[in-house]
Image 1 (cartoon, rainbow, N blue to C red):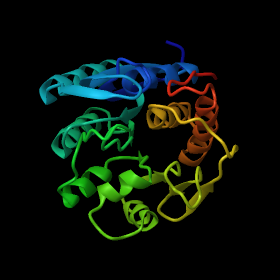
Image 2 (cartoon, rainbow, N blue to C red):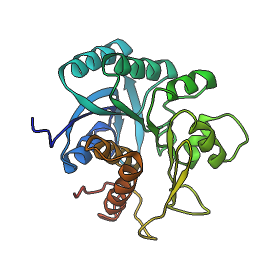
Image 3 (cartoon, rainbow, N blue to C red):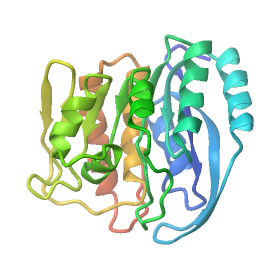
Length: 251
């Protein structure tokens, strides 16, 4: 395998429509010329506008898969998507760090589907914070970050508090005051990322695509700020690739 195509791993759900989950991730990774490996956490029955059911993959099966892949390949970055519990997430993260401590980890904090199906409830804030200390970046939107923290704080203040543990990309797709403006919270600074276009067509799985694009850019050697900026350009092209909920990928 050429060093120009580093290995990355997505650990996420399987969406048969291909709009979200590991299928969307691998499409995005391929466009960025990185080699995408995948482990499925849950098999779903869904389309781009209807979620019917999910069957979670056992934690033991997923842990064994991580062991095999992380021992076989030099994985630069891991992207994590849907998981059923914090215990499940903690095991995934700790297993990766035990085998490959230099591997970076991004968690796309998908807490529920766009059709309002709940994947995970955050009940133990202390456990969450311990997990975040082992993660490099999380990518919540304005709705998700409020659900990550049971307080009356604003999304911006919650993101700032979480940035003590890891970088936080607060996505602006649900920010009605500045629609499309993202904020990257680092320990010592906040980076504002303005949209290139004022109009977009909504897409199923856009969060998966964005986090995968960030993952790919980090694997290619770009820092967190540059990776997020490049991924924002990619996602805007993806959103406007057509008028439907299922987008087309272009490099």
